[in-house]
Amino acid sequence: MHRLRLVLGLSTLALTTAAESLSANSRQQAALSYLPPFGICHGITNDAASSICPVDGASVTNQSQAREYTASDKPASSPPPEVPQPEAQSTNPRQDEPKKEPKSSSPWSRGAICRRAGKDDFCAFTHSSFNNGEGISIITSPIYFVGMISQAPLNEPASATGKKQPRTGTASTEAPYKDVAFPGKGIGLMATEPIRAGRRIMARTPAVMVDDRAFRGLRRDDLALLLAQAILALPEPHVGRFLNLSSSHDAADSAASTSQSQMDLIYKIFTTNAFKTTVKVSLPDTSAQAPASEGQEPKAEVKDIDFHSTFTEVSRLNHDCSPNLGYYFDTATLSHKVYAVKDILPGEELSVSYVDVLHPRETRQRLLQATWHFKCVCSRCGGPHSHENDDAHILAESDSRVKQINALRRELDNYNPTSSSSSASGNKVVVGSGTPAKTLLMITLYELEGAQVRIYEAYYRAALEYNGMGDATNAMIYARLCLAKGLVARGPDRPFITSMKELIEDPVRHWSWRFRLGGANPSSDAVGKGQSEDKEEGK
Image (cartoon, rainbow, N blue to C red; front, side, top):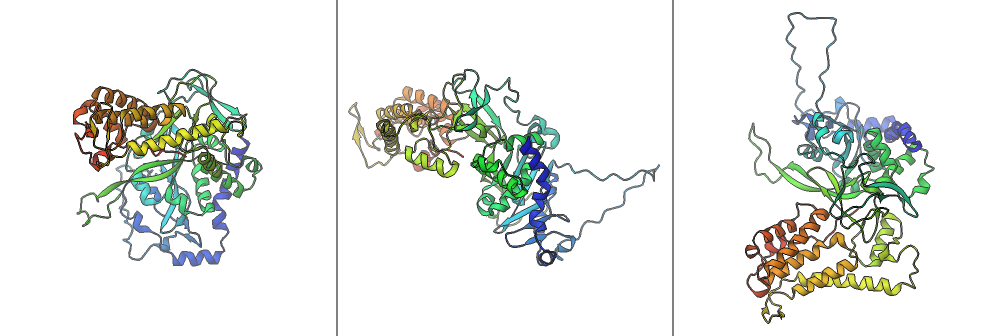
């Protein structure tokens, strides 16, 4: 709470630091030379988008100069403001009753200061009542923001947000875990009851989402300022949970006392705990040959846009190279859904993997140290009490299994019709060199490595290999196993999920039927549709 009070008490100073540092002369010259991007805002009638347009006193600053929006900045070519029409007089007017200003129906607000990277201005937009009052902030450009709030779940009015995404386990008596301090790791989550594989542990919406263009394009100080606006605009309980997250520099941050240090703290917490997420955004279709006719909606195209998002409770989960939880980001509800991929006993730490679990140990350690500044001591990395020299043979065996898994993936994914081999039954295999037996070896290797979070990949390939040899029953067995593991690890909207459902419905009509025996020639489109998407999402 001390940290929370300190940040809140200094937030006003932090948010005005850049503007106050400019001389009156430079600010005047910048205002005279700058024409704000009114084209973005002109013509927008969406109530929720009305808060993004420049207003008197709001400022947009790039890396070299401050640019303030004022009434005189409006381009001469812009259409004149609409002249208010006099209201019809009441039959019984009351002259002593003050006029009430119309209230905006938009639940969104925009931060007072924006920052520029390249040709885009980036601002912090906040919906404080989103998801039962949890609140959400988004740092992006105005045009992307309009595209985001035109779709569910961000397009629902403030009055409907209470029915949006119910939080799982909001009370300590409901959640199957509790906060625990783990030596050398900080605060993590520990299971308080038996948890079966496949059970959903939590589903959380983000505290803040940052457009990848802003994350990569803005200077650190500029992004820190926008993050301070975004976080401090959230409801106080959500602010407190964010500030209680760990950063990569907790020891140095504990003494932070200035407004600049507090912005740095928020920045470090965000970069330490952010997950990569992809959001569908409706943007103007720039490829349209002609503008929309009068009275018609302008054409739009939906694109997948990368964001970096922090989830205050999900971010409590510590890393393990053999995690017992899997997760995916559900774009339909903007929630991070976390499921158990193994049976978990009371007292076990709940964990996810921050990196690809099928990297060799040295690569995993290098990535973790470079990004999160810690050395992993999980069982696959030797354990907290092991000595690398004594356990070198065990660590080497683990790396050997990982190497064989990756070799098998390349071999099984080879659909080149020029290679051939013979199957155990004597039938000539005319496409590639995969066999069902090789997929069983792959499944064993995944299990030995404790890679249950990725084992759906092995089941997927087993389903294809059995179907490719004309064995529909075994193909459906492994397709079912792939769905059971893949749905909790990657979600329902993946192409490989669709492919497995099609195989179960009719193995013979599936593209893979007898393809290893020359019964089919898999096209690149068919193979691509069913790819198991081995690239793992992570922090």
